[in-house]
Structure formats: C-alpha cells, structure tokens
Image 1 (tube, rainbow, N blue to C red):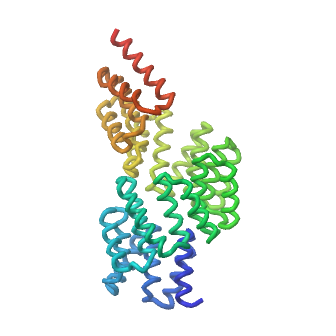
Image 2: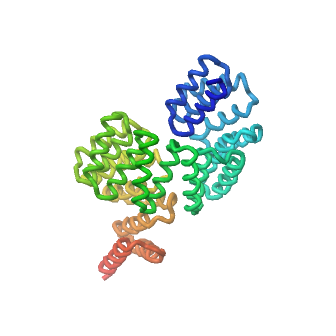
Image 3: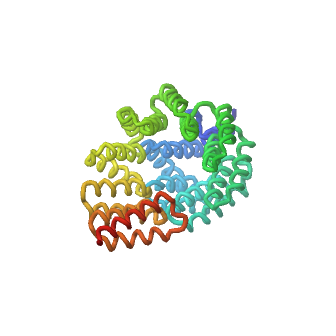
Length: 399
C-alpha cells in the first residue's frame, strides 16, 4: 500500500466509525513520514473526536507552526472550538472551505457544524443543507456525506429521502456503521420492527460487535417487552466490553424498569464513572433517588445532570419537582421556567409549573397555566385529565 492509499484507507476507517483502526494507521504513516500533513491533520481530528485534547493540541500547534496558511490548519482550528464556541468554530471552518473548496470533507465538516448549531438555531438547518449538498455534489458516493445528508433531511421532515440516502450509503459500503445506526434509529422511531431487526442482523454481520449496536439491540428488545433478552444482551456486552458505557447505562435502565433499585444504582454509578460528562446516568440516578424520597441526593444528581446538558429540558423539569418536594417554590419555578425556555412546546414542565403555583397557594397563576395548557393542540389525554383534576381541586379551595 503506497502513501496515498494508506491515507485514504485511514480516512475510510474514520468515516466508517472504526476509530482505533484509523488512529493506528495514521500513527504508522507518521512513523515513516513524520511531516506528512494529511496524516497529521487526520490524526489530530481523531484525537479531538476522542477527547484527547492535550495530545491533539500539541499536534495542532506543530501543524500551525509548519503550515500556518493551509486550509487543513484552519479546519483544525475550527474543530478545537467546536465544544466551546460553535459560531467561532463555524467561522474558522468557513475559512478552511474558502481555501480548500476542492476537498469535500472540509465542506462536510462545515455542514456538520451548521447541523449541530441547528439544535439551538433553526435557521442553521438550511445552512447545513446547503453545505452538505455542496459536499454531495463533489463526492456523491461518499457514505459519510450521504449519512450526514440523511440526518439533515430527517430533521427537515423528509424521511423517505433520508432513507434513500442511507440505503445508498450502505450499498456503497455495507460496513458503514454510522449509516446503520441512523437508519435503525429511524425505523425504530417509525415502529418498523421487522425492518429494524433485519438491519440489526445486517449490521452485526458486516460490522461485528459494537457498543452502539448492542445498545440499539437492547432498546429494541425492551420495546418488544423481551426483558430477559435485553438483560442478557446487556450482561453479555458488559462482560465482552467491561468499559462499555452503553452496556452499563442500559443495564441500569432495565433494572429501573424492573424495580430493582440497588442493581440499577450500581450500574448507573458505573456508567457515570465510565463517562462522567454524560447527562443521562446522573439524570436517572436523580429520578431513582427522588422515587426513594431521598430528595437532597436527588437534587445533587439532577443539578449535575442539568449542568452537563443545558439543552435538555428533562433534568430541569425533574429538578423543579424535587425543589417542589423540598418546598422551595421559588427555585422550583425557576427550574421549570428554564425547562420551558429550552423546550417551549413541551407540556410536562408546563403542567408542573401549574402544579408548583397550586402547591404555593397561588391559585390565579395556577389557573392561568392550566387554561393555557388545555388550549394546546394534541395535548396527551393523561395530561388533560391531570389538568382538569387540578382545576377541580382549585374550585374546592375557592369554595
């Protein structure tokens, strides 16, 4: 394999999701060609993706010193800002695109960052779609580009075109794990169980064991009510990959669903130790402690969860309920207001806001929120019934 083929193979490994193989190949290239820019840049991108910031930054500083005006340098500078300043990251990568229009993967990263930004700014979705179409025009047979294009199309509501792109990506490369994961999630959302099972089998056949696949498989078994199979799969994955965050998180969820509090807490704490920055184990631990009426510890877990995922309304909603249990009405209302700011269309924090005002004997505010809730189109029946019951209780107090 010559140098160009080796770099291409490493890039393909990275695109397929086989990061360890890509890192090893880039490192092998750099042992023989230590100043090869594409290998340096490729390795730096993977190190950033793996959160190995110190090693990545040392490598990026070297690239910056030796190739200060190269488009790959601007790309790396953008990627270093991705976690802390997304608009700045987009600006750097846009400069990389201006200098490296010939490289579809640079435009791919611009599309990816715009897509990430669209979680907070809807207008960014059209920018992401424009960029990914530009990358697709230059490289219509790159599975990684097709997969991102599919995800953007899904968020734009075009699920059929999303499916077509994913299936094309898998036709071109049946080992492209990210496309399997996206397509399996799509079919699960649409309750296409037979297609989901078929895709899981194909993904295992082509990609082998992988924590993300095992997690989807466990979710599928749980959806079908096959608790024992789901638990067996989770235990097997935990044995095969004792450092798997997904396995222990899923085991914790299964134990929670089965009412096995002690085992659930053990697995969720282990999942938290394996991935301390992830919000979900802390959120579930907070819910568990709230259920056990251990409100102070529930408060600590939920507060930490909300700090790790400020874009999620669920921890803030649960934090509001815990403050309500602690009779800290002002803090409860503050948390619920934050939850509604994050997710203004969600009815659960809206109902809990009415409940908090009711518990605080603020009848007029509680009634206003209840009436606003009942005007929501498509209000789930259980929420409607709970809201009407709350209004009835207010009428009793008025009498």
